[in-house]
Amino acid sequence: MPVASTRTEPVPQVLDVMSDSTTSSTTANDLDLIYLKGIMESPLEQEEGLKEPHLSPVRENNVELLQEILRDLDPFTHRSDTAAELACILTQPHFQSLLETHDSVASQACDSRPPSPCDFVDHEAEDSHTHNLHPPPDAIRMVGIRKVAGEHLGVTFKVEGGELVIARILHGGMVDQQGLLHVGDIIKEVNGREVGRDPRVLQEELQAASGSVVLKILPSYHEAIPPRQVFYKCHYDYEPASDNLIPCKEAGLRFETGDILQIVNQDDVNWWQARHVEGGSTGLIPSQMLEEKRKAFVKRDVELAPTGNLCTGVGGKKKKKMMYVTTRNAEFDRHEILLYEEVAKVPPFKRKTLILIGAQGVGRRRLKNKLLLKDPQLFGTTIPYTSRKPKKGERESRMYAFTSRSKMETDIKNGRYLEHGEYDGNLYGIKIDSIHEVVEAGRICILDANPQSLKVLRTSEFLPYVVFLQSPDFEVLKAMNHSAVDAGVVTKTLTDEELQRTYNESAKIQAAYGHYFDLSIISDNLDETYRTVKAALETVSKNPQWVPVTWVF
Image (cartoon, rainbow, N blue to C red; front, side, top):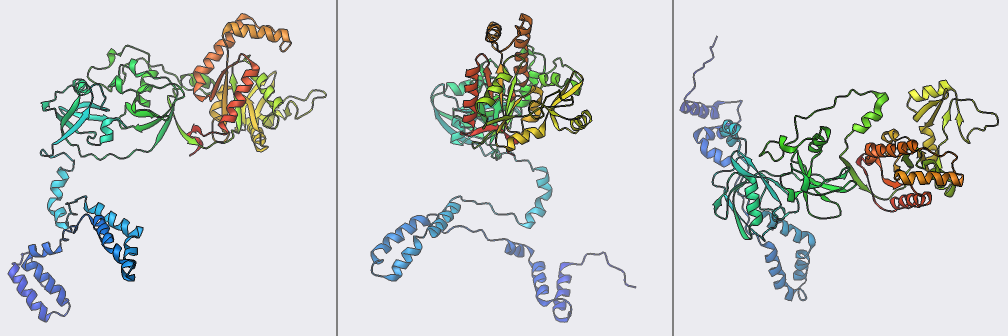
């Protein structure tokens, strides 16, 4: 029985065997053996032959050449059909676009070629250790910028690995428009002087500089991915001048509750770059995470923030621990933090529901009745369901829809009621199906709802317009109550305690649910409030609107 040999045959002996095989073998293909023999005789030559040749353009200005040819052809186009046909071909948009594309690609001067398979084999181990892209030491560039004293470059710095590095570039700023600097670039010198390690000092020097500013930098070679367009509605006021955590107060962007901002960069976990949709420059705003940290903890002096860390959050503060209980969801609503809400701009459309929110006694029911009476073709409302028995002479579908208690309890468990309650041993509630019936009839459904129901209503299913009727000052509220009693609109004169309770409740509702409101009105004049609500609904039905992004996607 033959034994397999583990000895490596010398190359000459293998070549001799292959030479004999070309004449005696009946299984191997002659061409394959000849090719294999060539590789064995000169492997380097064969490897070079396998590499793709480096292609280079003949010229990079073919568009200019085309214009010269057309000028030379012009005198002959009237006398020669061939010249006219050639001129017609050369002036075709597709042909000219082809030449423009060729010149564009050729002018890029891409000297690198795709690596050969041998490169992967020879350098695979080396590449595994040097995968990270670090700039070579000889890649230092000089970047020149012209500016006036006090002009902001739109760039901030940080210390990384003992070097001053560009931390962020503000969208739309001078540096961003020039495109010469990138995030991660290392600043080595400014106007021939070496920079220190203090970002604030460098920031002040650059801001005070005027004329030509020459930066010596080490490029980062990091390619930025273009971000998607994101728009946020702000639910709090922000003044960068009073923010002690912002890296650069001059780079901050001021905004107020209700402003719409376009977020242009969210790479930094603490500071976003944003601008107002109406226009203006880009600035820094606190990120959702940073502002949540500040608002979720007990307020304390900023000295807790470590010195030198420009983008630190606030830590080590006292927390309030609570366990969630469904019966106390209003308590948790007051502690909910909503700072930014992603929105999208949509064409004009008619809202399905009009939600009136306010404290007891501010006139929600009177406004609702006035809207229904003045424009019954535009507005409608639901009829509450109840489990009580109808009174003598009481007709269904006028004031209440009557049903059994067991049926009502079953529907409540199945989530078919928007809100419900019990009074004098009977259940009362608003059924969700009754809202859809009003909308399907082509009317805007007016709901005098509890603020807690806004979480259910503020969806694409109901497309609400939420109006908050804010309580006026205590003295105005008291005068309004006396006037209503004198006019016979109401019969009860409210006490000072009841009026104060209404005012306080209104303030609590606004603090807890203000981010849901589309319109806030001080309810001190019914006629004026009516006109304001009507005008607002007409405006949103004729103009593009910013709505929660969940309504669209």
